[in-house]
Length: 479
Ligand SMILES: [Zn+2]
Image (cartoon, rainbow, N blue to C red):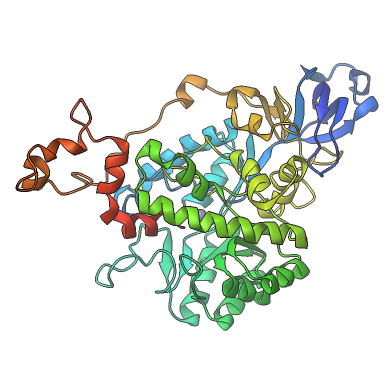
């Protein structure tokens, strides 16, 4: 059968391996693989009569498609943990995930790993994408996070428990954890996700529990990752042989040197924190939550600079899926943040966002670089991301997205749609008391102090008023 060929001509190639950009370079793709680069990549290499698509990349940059190793397709841009866990049905959640997968791909993200989500939606979405039913990035998926009563996702009183729709599943015994791993593997996950303590202030799983889960997953041919923010969990994860670690916000020098020595990659996932800190006021994120995130970001910057200097390998992850990190909007911002908070060069950040993510896709050495033999996941960018990494954040500049050698076609109008938040059940962000309306005794007119000219709350007043939501909101965001 005749192959189909793709020739991306005369662009500046940033190959994802950390090598400098190569101007005036062409890339030839046969089927789903890159076959030639440079002088040999030309139309003469294509057998007569076979179908050839040509893209003129003169003046453009050509990169591997981005890989987001931490992207939650089932969260549905939720504004609260309750929205994630309780309200949306599995059926609607699945359909939303399928729609959102297109947005992720449109942003130049050709591969994602979902480290946890509700039901087995991630597994189903992966299969639908592989079968061509849904347009989306290459994907690997975990099932529900394995949680203990001291981990993420056991937010509610025991009378409620961890509901069926939760992104986590509660197990406080080794037998329960082993049973869960077996079931998840049977149901088709690529990886197991452990959820340790929410903020990295203690280690939630015991060393034995981590090791037993990791060993069983490996025995069954699957990978394991963990939400680990503090030194003790990161150390324990390294000892247990966990394949890569999410977050690592607060790490001692000793932990960092053990992590570097182990070669275990770290996926810092700065975007969620930075979006709330930098842009939170635009969406009225509560001020106390922003302050907490700002402190976490400060500490993270310190840890990541030391980790980068020590040679810890890092990959790009964004925690996309929340309302403050919607699908297809901010994935590439993580590269800018890795430069700011880990001290990477732009070429190192691009490598983190491409080549280093291949492991999380189960395709180490097969994708994430523009090198002959690799899968042809490629983006053509109007702009120079080596000089200005931010150009990757503007989708108008992502002119062409190629996945598996196929130039992707999108319905741009449809992809601009977002969906209503039909749940949440909130009546207000503060209490409507008599004094709020008419003022304290002797303070006539005080009630107007919180209003703008049109009678609505302005942003800074709203921040003060929602302080009482701090605990719940913070819990909801730091996953
Ligand atoms: Zn996450």
